[in-house]
Image 1: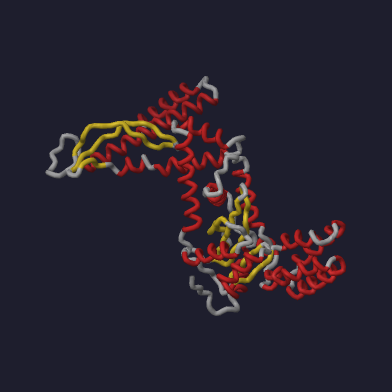
Image 2: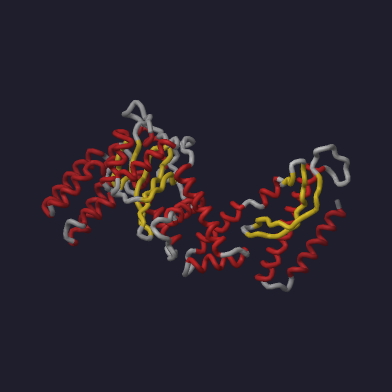
Amino acid sequence: MKKQTTEESVDQEKIVGIFSGLDPESIQLLFEQRARRAALALGVELLESDVEILCGARYSKKGAGDCYRYGTEQTSVVIGGARYQLDRPRIRGSEGEVYPKTLRKLREQDLLDEEMKRRMLLGVSTRNYEQVIEGYSDKVGVSKSSVSRAFKRASQKDLDFINHGELSEYTFIGLAIDGIEIAGRVVVAVLGITSELEKLPIGLIEGDTENSEVVQDLLTSLIERGFRFHCNYLLCLLDGSKALRKAVRSVFGDVALVQRCWLHKLRNLQAYIPKGYHKTLLWRMKKLMGLSSFQEAQRELAALRKWLLAISHSAANSLDEAGEELLTLHKLGITGELRKSLSSTNIIESLFSVVRDKIAKVKNWKSKKSAQTIRWIASAVLDHKKNKMRKLRGINQKNKLIQALGEKLENNSISA
């Protein structure tokens, strides 16, 4: 034991000696070089282990049909998002070349694709999309077009995951639906809210939010993927688009409880009245949305309509268009942080804000026939979900919401 401790202290002294006198950048470079060599050495060791399993120990006697060693050849492996060369042992069997499992894993293209995608999403804040590709392609030793194709493969997998992933493992209590416009393309997004108040991106489709058929197709596809909701009612957060509401009703019928975004309605009402009334309108809308009792909120809604009618008939008609769909959460008895989270489409618009930040500097958008826009959105959304997407606030009222949504209908099953 003493001898081992002495050897360890000697090794530590050697390491200290190597690093002393080096600047931080040189130390980092040396560390990366040694880490790569260690990773490559481990790869070779794993390959040799596979060879021994398939071929037995060197010079051992083998029966007919067993694999045997057949020299070496140079190959590439993926480590840390880049390709490196090493000599790998060749193996022959009765049916020809045999490729060890370890080799297939080390050469997995997905590893490189994912790393390139990650770098692209991080690097897109630079001035030019082309420069991002070229800067990264220099490092990994592949062409610009190869990096572009890698990102395309990885982003397509993200889009497929959002649009085709199995949903039956979750139970949902709500949906938020809205559209985002990027580079002249409109993409409708669906954010699912689970019974644990998690936010999950579960659908993306290109098409105008004013087109109910597009949205209806998207919602129908959710059911085909095993979408099910926890309660008898499904809470649907909408911005006021008639097409969105029509699509929700077409797919879910009376099961859907629509909560209209009060911020969208506020902006809509402000467009009908003189600017001098805007602050008063904001105050009255905040008061309406802050009331605990549904009955009090009904009275305040009527008072707000009367006030608007004296200013603008069009504004009063616009308020009537939303009506008590502004008060759905009041009716369910939800207050506090959870109501604040669910009374507007901010939970999906904040996600759109992140997407815009990630892809704001991309200039080289392809033609409208390309799926480039929706793929970029899918990758940006999943990158945010993996790192920063949190549960809704108001977890203490989760059970209250579930109970309220489950009180009225007897059956929540829907056929596609």
